[in-house]
Image (tube, helix red, strand yellow):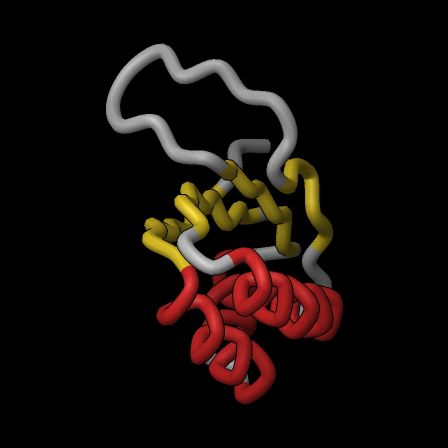
Length: 95
């Protein structure tokens, strides 16, 4: 069953965050993920508004977790932690 990364992000350093995005894109591809939404226009109806919302689909929760825990994504996280405030959750899809 498919699974989704849902990330909500406020970027504090766009230059460094750009490096995160570059490495994270590679990690996602390595684990069978595909971006469905990446920034773009959003309408916040409830809760805390964030600058960016990102949705990535993976073949399974296991693929999504392996991506997050991978060596490649660990390198991306080094950039993210110093350039953004964010939340990331993995949600299993319905089929």
